[in-house]
Image (cartoon, rainbow, N blue to C red):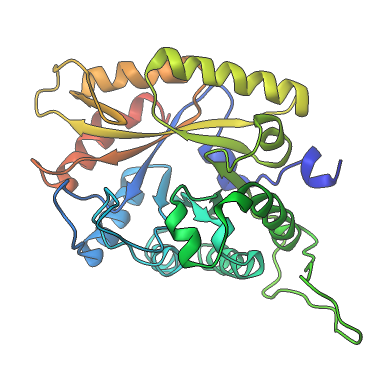
Length: 319
């Protein structure tokens, strides 16, 4: 068992987002309407600055390499590294999290260079969320075999963990005679925390050994409690006594009526703010440490929604 298995990198920003017996709230960008395909990313940067000032703990950015009429998401996402760089330059305190870089379709040394760059620009506010992708046609487009997903993820994770760790080590794909010893600049004093988003085809024991935590999508409460119990059992086996975070990405349609009860929608809830607070309390008490909200902004301006949540929901959890 190597060092990364015993002690996945943590940092001040990771500890601010994921803490034992507490729950923090973040936002997934971009915030769009269901029928929206063209995004004003200057507006998204302005929303990010506002969320930072209002006290949200994290901004999450997706990695969507390609679009297709067969995919349900019509939004044209920016390259995640470009957007993260812009967010790093336009925010001051909030964590920036990739949710998630498709590790199997990118070279891990390129990912390491980009991660170190964002962490430098943000002054240590970056958490590297990593996934394996769930769209087999994209593998073919990039010349990858989806059947190799599990092994690719593990191998790339190992190379990446060495590169963003302290001390940083470059593990080349090949070392011909006379090859120099490579290193990455700028140097960093604190290892960049790595977070598993989804399973990447790995067992929960593997995730518990290698990652600071496990981020998953919303499920109905009983199922989610079962998954958390499975996660805790894996942590107890793979990293006895260690804290490993559990987080959830949840869609939210915030009702105008603060007293509207929660009702199920795909991957989340429609709810007034009082019911939302109750839901989040229950999630915290059941072992969730962070929730990132995928906000539906069809009926109300996104700015109004994040302001209402900041005024009436965040104080319950960000004390």
